[in-house]
Amino acid sequence: MLDVPNFFWESEPTLYPLYIAVREYLEIKPRILVLNERCRVFLDLAEILSDSIADNKESHQTWIIIVLIIISIFVTISEVVLRFGLLHARSGPASAGPSLFSTVFGSRASTCTCPAGVNSTAAIGSSFPQGLLEYTS
Image (cartoon, rainbow, N blue to C red; front, side, top):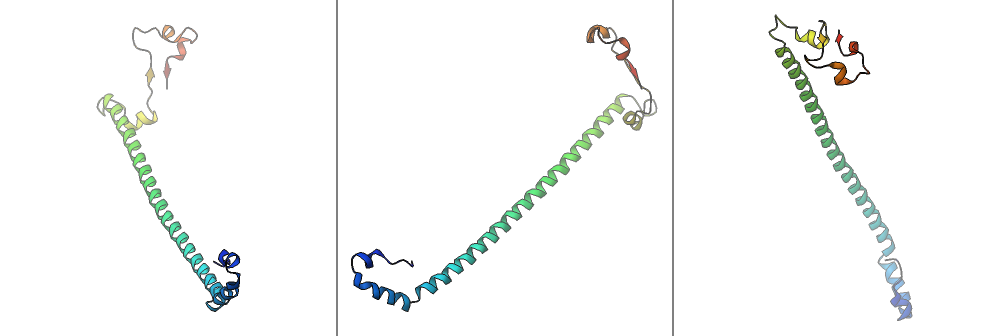
């Protein structure tokens, strides 16, 4: 906008002084500076608004992730409780079998051996001695 059009250089060189006079009379250069400053302000405002919108979206996504983590923790805890409940129910009534606390924390001695009819050294291999397959706690 501040450049002199080619028309004044090529076709009508005598109109160049008139072009300069009109440009000074209409104050083109200061007006362009004001317009550029206003455009800069609008661009800054648009950048601030876009950053604000992006922050709101990130905040929303963060809350969704937090809720999903809480749901995952709740599901995991309920699964653990249900599994220990099933283990406790299989062992018999509360008076005859170990309590849930003793099942979880092992305050009662338990013995684990291979099922009847299974040769433990043949099933695993002869490199393991018989004493390693049976344990007591």
